Image (cartoon, rainbow, N blue to C red; front, side, top):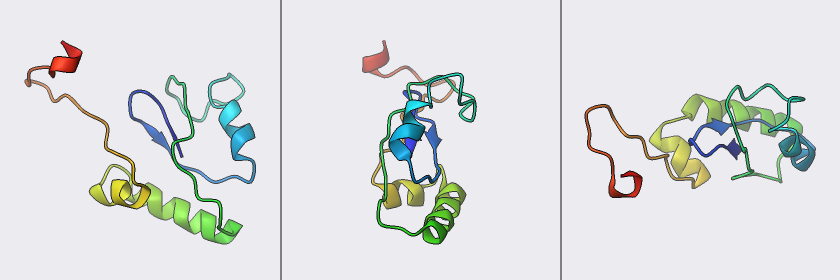
Amino acid sequence: MLRNPAGRCFVGHTEHLDQFALTADTEVSKWTGQPGPWPIVWRHDKLSRKAALKFEVSLKRDKNTPRFYTRTGLTPPEVELPGTPPSEGNA
């Protein structure tokens, strides 16, 4: 899984993750549609291709839900809602 500074996640599977991640911020790869950088923030190495595809689909189904963050151990991005004062770190 890749994640940009804005907190957007890209979920996918590949046999060549390091090579895939290198192309994430280039014009060779347009799949993100969002600015990077896109570092690797989570991976699972012990799955067959069939199991990896099934796991990818289930993660995408859970994306942006509490279950997604529980399963991956990632923290949800901080989102400022309209009409709320900015946090001290962003002032």
